Amino acid sequence: MTWIAAARQTRPRRTLLATMVTALLALVPAAAGHSAPLYPTPDPDPMYQQPADLAEHRPGDVLAVRSMPPLAMFPDTTITLVQFRSTNSAGEPIAATTTVLQPNNQPPDAPVLSYQHIINGLGVQCSVSKVLYTDDPNLMVREAVFWNVALRRGWTMALPDHLGPNYAYGAAKLGGQVTLDGIRAIRQVERLRVEHSRVAMAGYSGGGMATAWAAALQPSYAPELAIAGAAMGGVPMNLVAMLEGLGFGSHPVFGLALAAGIGLEREYPERFPISDQMNARGLAARAAIANACTNDILSTGAGHGILDFAATTSLVDDPRARAVVEENSLALYDGAPSMPVFEWHSPIDGLIPVDAITDTMRRWCAAGAPVVTESTPTPDHLTAAVLGLPAAVGWLDARLRGEPAPSTC
View 1: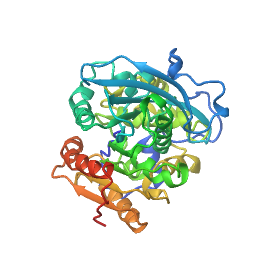
View 2 (view 1 turned 120 degrees about the vertical axis):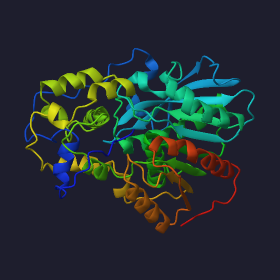
View 3 (view 1 turned 30 degrees about the vertical axis):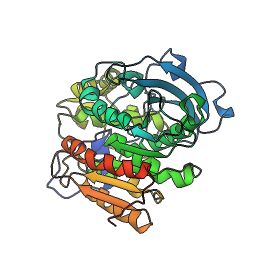
View 4 (view 1 turned 180 degrees about the horizontal axis):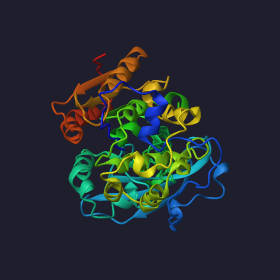
């Protein structure tokens, strides 16, 4: 997910809740409204449906396994789709999916990298498992090159659909839980032969956010998992701070903020019912992007702002909505990783608050985590992703070979 911290104001800061209203959708009404959350259209494929017996399974239990067709962009690679049981933000059971890319003839217990891809979307077709079988240029140009580097090193790649079954774009903590349960699951799939593999995690931007949450949650959510390390770049650590950077004015990529509000409502329907605050134009925009991926989300919101889609901005003091945003802000989470961490970012990233990254890394260092943090020489969020990858791959390789982790704390 890429939140856009734009239209920064020169006037004095408004209160936190007022800026949250500015950023998303005027927050929550005092009484129940008339517009229920709009969820994505269910996929008829059973691999993306919620089994009736979910409650009988533990987090990480394997629900289904499917062999997938080979892909020319990943030569000599076997592809497997795994459905598993995970947990949503309310602690309820959900089914999620992860796609496993594995070099042919790989020996047992070879290294595993769980890579959390950037997913800017609200529909099932935006999932990694679906995008792999499209001609998505972003995947071909940016991600597929790195994945092939990892595969040529003999690593198994696990690519979770970390937004969950409702495609709750913006629900960052959920992404961490899905990531950890995906790792639990693939260890149980006999044909993958990774039960005793060393495992690491990586991701950038929204994928970095899922990775960072997984690292921070692992000691409490999945303490039995031994993870060699987590590499994360360009992570939106503090959603509250990002929202404070948004104004009432229009913005070319306002659609991403709108999509995040819709995603959070899906995950927290009682605490974040933003649809009740939308005017007719807002509800029409919501319908237009309910199953959309990046390009359609951007085109729907381009040049718009909150005042175009909100019926009212008067209800700014509801603590439930504030708690939702805080709950998904890793900088405000008390826990810290016990695994080694490699973190990189642009020193003047125009999209995310760098101070939140610095503060979070300092806190993780104080908690005893071995942290290496690097600043890339670019002001551009996406360029930083590419420039930081070589060092991240080298760091991951060392962790997966069992070398002691360095630290710049």
